[in-house]
Structure formats: C-alpha cells, structure tokens
Length: 58
Image 1 (tube, rainbow, N blue to C red):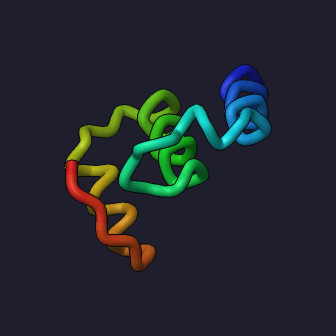
Image 2 (cartoon, rainbow, N blue to C red):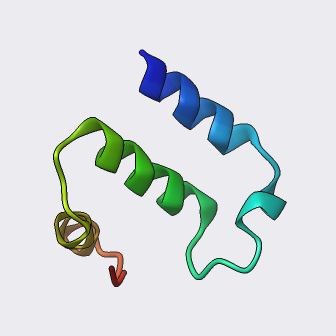
C-alpha cells in the first residue's frame, strides 16, 4: 500500500529530518500515517498515544 511505502521511506531517512523536534522520529511518522489513513483529528491522535502510554500534546 502507498502509505506503508511512504512510512517505510520516512523511517529510513536521516534523523536530521526530525532535528529539533520534541518527539522521536518513529512517533511523528506513526502519527502522520494514522492521520493520513484514518479520519482522525489531532485530539484523536493525542488520545491514541495517551492510551499507549505516551504523553503528547496537539
């Protein structure tokens, strides 16, 4: 699927792409993948990560 291909490509890219960010690269990639794949709001993403034990803020 196209989203999986994009996610895999983003995961392989240099960590410099996420330099200065507050969250780890994998977390950003996961949030973007969910956001593009499902009709989610930023609040939905925040809740999903909170349920998994990650404290994020939209």
